[in-house]
Length: 141
Image 1: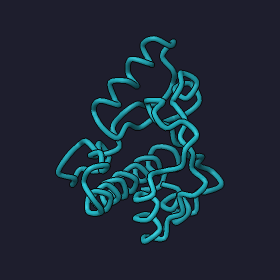
Image 2 (image 1 turned 180 degrees about the vertical axis):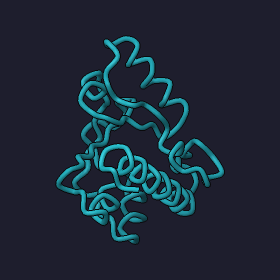
Image 3 (image 1 turned 60 degrees about the vertical axis):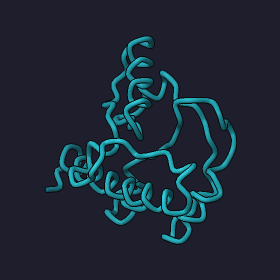
């Protein structure tokens, strides 16, 4: 998403963060295979470290996006238990109408091809999300 925002010339106006719904890998960098697949596309994930999403995220951010339906359920439960929040909560692939799925699959057991597929889906979702953000917040059609 950062690359898409930079390409659109909005890096100084759009803030992006990342968090997971579970605490499995707190403080750890992305899976080596994710980093390698991303690097092959010119993306540097080396500064990322896992953190868990919080109620404050739902209050601070305009959009909080889930990678799949199970994570969306966790986010909605967090919203209900924590005073709502202002964030629009959805799945990332809700912004990728041409994707053949609404859930980004877990690539952990899918080999290199699984990580490539996930990146394809995420890039598609980010492109659609940026388009929606531009239309809603920046009057860019």
